[in-house]
Picture 1 (cartoon, rainbow, N blue to C red):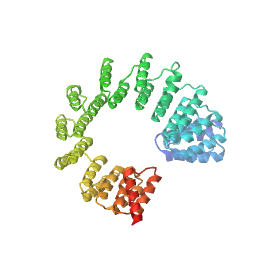
Picture 2: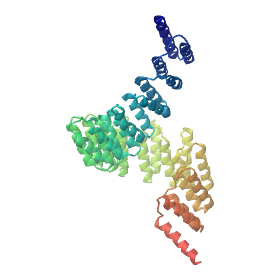
Picture 3: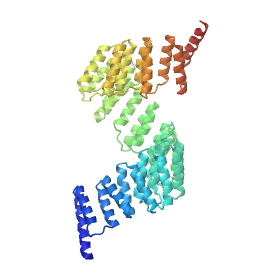
Picture 4: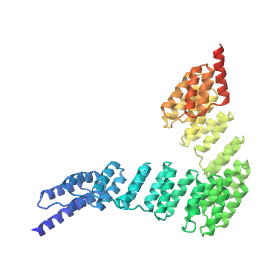
Length: 515
């Protein structure tokens, strides 16, 4: 009899697995119900297998229902099944059920495996709940599951993401005290987190400074530190790290050179930038689009536009590395130096060479021509954008709106303002400021106040320019009570009014007091 029951139980289990595998979940459930109503006694292992199969096929709601039916019968899941259940629920971000499972496990003195813990910690940190993840991590040892370097890396990275820099560093020290050797992923999390908050020296001290003879640092770590020191203006330190890495058998790559190149070009250290380009090529590393575009940017910033153009034509284009960014850089430099017609000619040249202009190209030229009062060419460019199917972005819309306001075409500016909404482009503070400026000049203060209130209702925070414009407009129409109210709001937001406007407001109040 026992042999017959065992065979029947095996048949039921095989049939259930077959139905689940083929997606026939209702049939699988029916077979299990039939099994429970038969002479075959159902054991905890049956629930474990059934729930495990549903978890494997991401049928978490069904798995939850069977779990809820199992517990009152005194059955429990194994640590393995619980752990797989938690991992599966992490995929669908079901934090409530995960917590319920953990509570049930702890009551039974069952602990998830390390994989499940790490997946759960990753989910919490991805939802900016790193403080909660930290508590879980700190309780793991008490529960009997020691966190590993992956656990610490996940939480350290999560803490940096939500700005808890000090906690992240403390956790790093805790990991070290436990004798856990950080791998390059952990080092990367620490270095990037500290560099993002400007604590580059600390990043250096905790890595190269503290462990330079104990760990082989990856190229990624070196590059992150070099980039961090460049960001805070310490090119000397960045260069010394480059020298150190070479001595330790880690050759700089394209990213290393591009980071240094970006710094040199931004700081107009163009001779050093050209030297870096030569060093790259001598090391067998070919400069890419980014490398050359940084050099073009540096030359244009140093008002050497002609040299930038010749470099693009004679060196970059023959290598097939000139792109829309290259042309935009030079077109912008020409427009900024009142050579918009030359920029327009270069625009035509890029099209002839098969390099398609983008919204940035059109924005540069349209802004330049509007500034110079050449609305004919500006409109022609807008028509070309339309023909090419290039949509206006917020920057270009704001440029056009600002131009209309400055020329007193407020009603047309309103049309542009509302067209942005129809195109799904949200107004930002710069856009509001442009329209408010135009309305203030036209003494349409009631509309200014409506926009000011609209900004607050749409959670678009006023900046110093907004407050200056609004208060200035209110002073001009002698609404000093409202001007003072806006000034109070401004100070509550941590802004200060510039001397000219504050003097004008105080003088107006004195005049009112003497009249």
